[in-house]
Image (tube, rainbow, N blue to C red):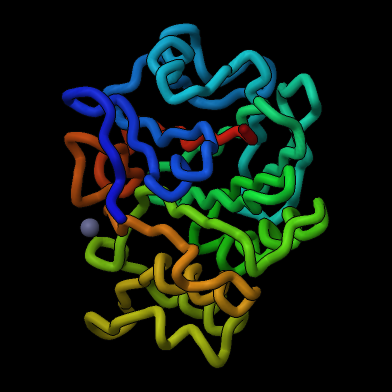
Length: 248
Ligand SMILES: [Zn+2]
């Protein structure tokens, strides 16, 4: 299952699996206009972005965003949307409220149960992985009535094991959080340096939380490998991708 590009060059991508469920969603590229760095007082997507994303079925009038801090705290979107506080997991149980997570290398993970009104978006980098943000997102939708075995999950473009070199302080926290798992997620490249595979790590954490492998959609598109289309913190740090989704 590959991402579907929209526009030439692509302004945003969509996931075939989420589209099949009728979930309006998009991950913007560096060609999407009007994506501002988030701030607490103003919506981080301007009118140009709203127009560019309208074909995806996203209405940004009730956009919900948070101040992301690489944690695992949850914020529930208000029916009218708006700033949701400090959080890295957003939950919606309202039709049409567009959740937004901003990334440049970190994973944006969308989870929804097609049979229940429950949608979560999570921001997950290595710190979020250590702190359990992915598991918190599963718990968030479960708490809203979702059944884990029915969950459909999509992982947006993010840094891959090809480009994500980490050092001892990262490995110390990862190995402490997941003593029996972490070695499966890394490849040693030289003394004190490893390539970290956050895709495999979070897919495994999703499966261990009860999500079926075949319901996890991960195009494995690396932000650092595709600088002409995507933003990468590690390669240039010139902006943020926005991943947005709303309940249909
Ligand atoms: Zn790469």
